[in-house]
Image (cartoon, rainbow, N blue to C red; front, side, top):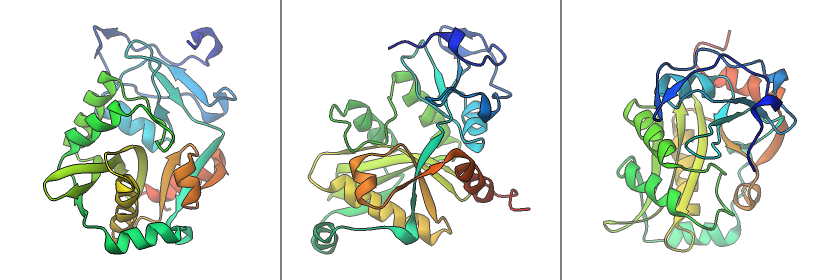
Length: 237
């Protein structure tokens, strides 16, 4: 369903030309201006500065299409605290015996390509990956703020996920699998990798069966924004 721009608290209009931004977004409305759905703005662009501004302020894009870019700050956010991680017994057994190996940023383009091709989104974080989104997050990856975690069978990529990584903040965006449990193994290994680097929680944005099974919790926006403030370096004081 298309969203009527008149229903949204308007912010400064940023024109686009054939999908290319004329200028990045410089400000978003206050979170209190968001609709009950979390919709906080329409338009703007997906440049690296715009995406960094959004994530640093607890906002993420979820486009209807490459022509209609929506921005969200949901009143309820799903987060996974690593010290409360629950790994099902069957997955623990699989982690011990799996021949799959773990990789980081070995094949970011392939991961996001595979994620965009997924038709069963039940265990996805929820982002609709349009061609414009793929280009934008690839640019964010090149800038050092988007990371892929992968499951490999020898030299074949069989599962993985990617997300936004800024200081001690990580937001999972999407995942895919080509073999049973390969994406689950990737997310567990990703949590281990992030934990070793001082990150203590993951933004899942929305609840899915997988993250719920792993112990993800829904928290109010105000609590989420405080967690975010602490996770972004320089915001502890």
